[in-house]
Image (tube, rainbow, N blue to C red):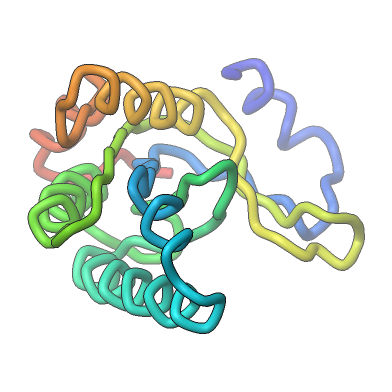
Amino acid sequence: MDRVFEILPTIHLPATFLAVDHVSVLCVGLESFPAIVEQLTPEQAGTHLGRIYSRLEEILVRYNGEIVDYWDGNTWVLFGRSFSVTNPAMGALRAAWEIYNSRGDLSLNLGLATGKVIVGLSGGEDGEACAVWGEPADHAQTMREISRYHQIPVLVDHETLEASSRPSSPSR
C-alpha cells in the first residue's frame, strides 16, 4: 500500500478519488439486525433502521466521524478525513465505545484500525457511492470479525492505540 501512496502524486486520478493519510477506520457490524427485521414489515424495518442510524450519526458527529460506506452488513466510518481534529484515533475510540454502550437490544461488533487509505466514489463516472480502500479498512473489518468470534465488544489495532496516545495527529 505504501507504494500506491508513492505513485499517486505522479498520476492523474479522476476527481472522484482522494488519497487520505492517517485516518482511523471504524467498521460497525449490526449482527442481530437481520433477525430483528425478519419479524417486521418492510415499513417497520425501515423505521427501525432509520432510528439506529440516526443514533449512530448523533454519536459520530460528536466525535467527527463520517459514514463513508455500507457494505456486506458493515458500516464504514472514517475519522480525520473531512474535519480538522487534533486526534482522530482518540475520537474513533471514544465513538466506538459510546456506540457499543448505547446499542440497546442490538448485537453489534466493532473493529478499528488506523493508517493510510484511499477514499473515492465508486460506481462509474457518476460516483454513486463512496468507498474506502486500504489496509486499515481491511484490518478494521478483520478486527470486527475477530471481535464477533471472541465476543469482544470493540477490537482495536496497534496503530490506533499508538495514534490515540499522541498529542496531535500526524501532518498530512
